Length: 403
Ligand SMILES: *Cc1c(COP(=O)(O)O)cnc(C)c1O
Image 1 (tube, rainbow, N blue to C red):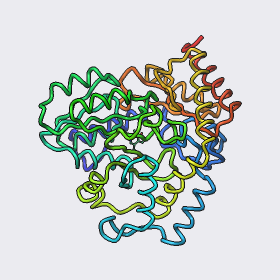
Image 2 (image 1 turned 45 degrees about the vertical axis):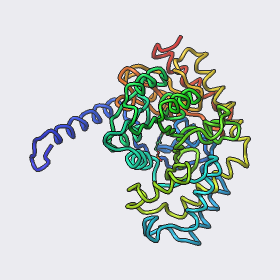
Image 3 (image 1 turned 180 degrees about the vertical axis):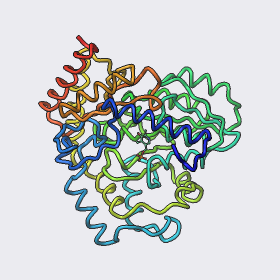
């Protein structure tokens, strides 16, 4: 590589990455960054001129393109234009933002909420604002990267507990000094495995050791609970999470992130978190779309029911065929392949037969845990899911993964 002929650790890393990507491309094993040409409905897309069943989307309730949500976004553009040209603190706040935050606070049964321009940045800024040097953060081993980055950025003592292992968490809490600020953080639904955090237990332990509890609901809003309001509804327990974090880019077909919490906490974040103070406000169309989407979830509970039925069919079917789907109970369904090579080959064979799934390999998951990470939504038809599973099964059989 000729980068001013500089030879240092970074240029060597760039060359190594390029070599890895080139090798994948040579084997037709490169599936990332493929442009979607058209979204036909939530369940089907056109890629490379071919119509494929979409089994890699986070649009769990199929809300992308929903008429009410599109209409709200268009109206917002007509009324407010396309940008906010300011940070929230200085001229960037529209009545729309306040409405959205009120909607979120109501949806999450808390006093108040604050929004940011992405879920990633929400975790980064919120964790690093609340925690600092000398404090302690306790994070599940397979928490989302944005949580890990927020913990590192905070400068706090960083303790990781084994995945969903409450005894290990308690041991770590016990060993921490009694008088420091403590924060326990976990995903509600784990984004690569689809399993659910033991909320009742993590609440109990956090309380016992005087730690705040923060839960990332990226994959549980619109997914868990009869009404789709998330993990507290799922376990039938009231307002027990101190910091309820979520994203506006998954079930909610927009972009952005939020935290819902007590008034004092939100007020502190509004005046202390740097991503709020130093980065522009959400654009009007996205704020309006998100606001409407929360209302659609409550107005159309049939979507949650359909999602639950489809999830059951998908997990039950794949398990019955002999695949290892780990401990998933939700719409995120890992199909364990173990090696990168097998994950790529299974993906290739599925995509060749118009089932759009994607592989997840290290470092996104632990080495030896490479997988297909498939998702279902409320708008897939049972017959389509059946066909997708047949395609995965036949490929898995050819590869000797199942009998
Ligand atoms: C996707 C995701 C995020 C980041 O959200 P964005 O809005 O995409 O930035 C944070 N946490 C979890 C668990 C996620 O899955």
